[in-house]
Amino acid sequence: MWRTERTIDGVEGTRDELLPYAGPAAALPLFGALARLPYGSAVRAWTALLALALAALALSSLRLAGARGGRTTLAALLLALIAGPVTSALALGQAALLAAGGLAGALLAYERRAPAAGALATLVAGLQPNLAVGLIARMRDRFAVGSAALAGAAFAALTLLAGGGIAGFGAYLHRLQEHGRAEAFAAIQHTPAAIAWALGAPAATAAAFGLATALVAVAAVVVVTIRQRLCALDGTLLGLAALPLALPFFHEHDFVIEVIPLLILAVRTSGTPRCVAGVSAILVLVDWFGLAQRGPGQAQILAQGAAVACAFAACGRSRRLGYADLAPFATLALVACCAFPLAHWAPAPTWPDALPAGYRAPAAADASGVWADEERAAGLDAPQPAWGALRALPLAGCIVLGVALAQGARRARL
Image (cartoon, rainbow, N blue to C red; front, side, top):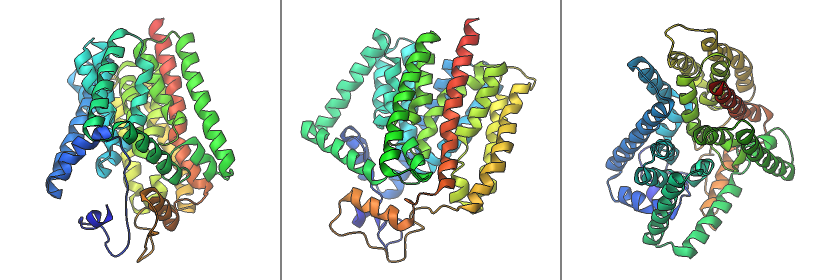
């Protein structure tokens, strides 16, 4: 991998900078086709796929929200484009955006009783399985189950086509376990366990806290869905809001899935639910940890947050700004007053810039072991409370998002 990766423009070839990616074997036909292209052509093709996925995410969410009017559509498209997790996914070329586009398309296809389209969209979502599990909450009718079954069969066929088979699937699970262990408590992880570690908890305590949080999140989704009598779509949106709290592996760009419920709430809610959703939008869609990692870009991050607040306010059906539309602006100002001092007090390193000059990875280590050593060498595994506090903000935003979804569903029933 490194022999090829070191030839790419922008990679520092005088030191080891291996960046491994762990994905399902079903994605190999796609990535294999890209790998056979010249690097520049592959970048353009992949970028085009990500742009199509972003369009699918935004337009499917708008249809699910019942959006009307060009102003609302343009504002919603702007909100999707400038969301921090989206710009991160685009800049890093992350498959999370492709999976999120498939997830949104699947939800729309399920609502429209289109099993074939739903199967294709579900298959695309499966390119990043940890995000696709959010669709489990939608398996409440035969159309959704049928679509998921077709997608599962196609996924299995692609796995066999890639030469993985049963043994390959077992190897994939083992690699996921090793890769997850390599960065379980790294600063790039936005999980409850990693945040607990950053705040000073021992490794065993942090892992137990992560497991307990996951169980509570799943139980909360089930209880709220039943007690509030949430429809299939609203129950799934609640599941997406809780997903970052339940998964053991979650990066900043993975919050792209929260754009789906936030777009829907931005378009269809008013009053208190809209106010709460606006608070969530700022907490989730602004890269707060980026303030510590990218000091020169802090003004840009703040400007992006202001743009998110403006786009959220413009998504409303009313042409007048109400008190609820001021919530994201107030949240941005309040949180920034706390986040900026934390970022200045404890600047965070970035990979690979923080690697020592001439760094060499352990010769006998596998890809996951090399990645773990690179994180240590770059200082990304330090238990720094300020980093944990900044990374906790999007998770807090997901809890607030869940409250907004429950409030919006209750108001719709009245």
